[in-house]
Structures are given as C-alpha cells and as structure tokens.
Length: 252
Image 1: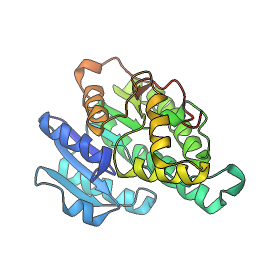
Image 2 (image 1 turned 135 degrees about the horizontal axis):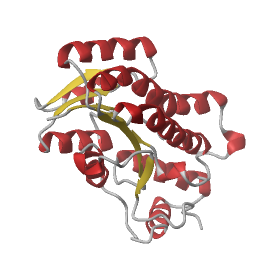
Image 3 (image 1 turned 90 degrees about the vertical axis):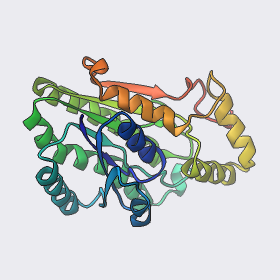
C-alpha cells in the first residue's frame, strides 16, 4: 500500500485520481486551495487546505505529512488553472504570472518538498499533470500553454535527477476533459472567437482521431498505472490521454 499525495485533489481530475488510488487500496492525502471542496472529501481521503504557490505553506504542509505518514511514495503534482483566454496582445502581465504561478510554480514546489521524502524511501513516483497544450501551440491560451510546456521540461529534469534514487517521474497530458473547467474554457473561447459554445465543443471533439472528449477517470487510471510496479521502467515520459489530438485548434 503506497502513500499518495495529490495536489488540487478535492475536485475535478484530482478528485478522480484520489478516488482511483483509494479504490486500488492506497493511502491518499490531498491538498486543495478550496476549503469547501476539501470539506466534501470522504473519510477515506485525508485533506488539507494549502495554496501550492505559497512556499512557506507548502514547506509546513510537507513537514506535517512527513510527521504523520513517516514518508511518501507517490506525488501527483496536479494543481492547475486555465488562465486567461485571449490573444497575446490582450493578456495582462498579472494574469500571465498568476497562471504560471499555479501551473508551474505549484508543480515545482510540490516536487521540491516531496523529493527528500521520496529519496528517504529509495523508490517512488512523481506524476505531473501537464496537458496536450504542452506539446502544441494553443491559440488564445498563451500562458497556459507556456506553463504546460514548462511542466514537461521540469518532469524530464526531475526524472534524470531522481532516477538514480529509484524514483520515476512522468507527466500525463490530458486532452479536453469533460467538466466545469472545460466548460469555462469552451465559453471563454467561444466569446474570444465569435463562435458558439457548441461550435467550439464540436471542434475540440473533431480535433481528435477518437472524436471524443476525455473523462476524468481516464486520466486517473493512467495515474494509478504510472505509480504501479507495472510501470517500473517508465520514466521521463510525457503521455497523452487525449484520444489522439490531431488538430489542437478547434476553430480550424
């Protein structure tokens, strides 16, 4: 039974990942900035309210986790926000920085403070949540795409640094995942491009060879696999769970 930490794990993809790890028989602890979402967690999932961009808060949380659990086996650095949806010339610097702070700084801080706990075990797995936006250009989403590309570079570096300690690192790249966050993206892109929400939705679906959106459970199942012994030699990989994106721009 592994000890699994998931950042932004009280809702959305993170919640699905947490529930799948519990179903697989693991101990699960999640952090989230949303106190109301944390309060809805079942007794099988431990939760703490933590802002992944706040380094002192992250350091204190990992000290608490280490004292309570005595170690860590799996980190899922999952925290992210969609950021602004607009053309590059219309994006404010503060909005750019806020998007990178959660998506990139949050992943860095989680990996930074998890690493000593993982090294002490001499094994383990770090799973970053990137995006297919991390392997394509993404019109109207410059901060998000930039952050998700950077997460892949971070993951590959972490894999090289931690591999000699028996620790693997990989990134999951979700495509368009059904849920509230994607609905916000669809509506924002519809406004930015002068399209309807349904037109944007159809464009995203048709932009994959499987002609389908992704469910959160699809991402969760990949996370559980990457943490398992079945993936013992899978490291440094950016693995898309997206139905095979063939056209990342839903307007075309």
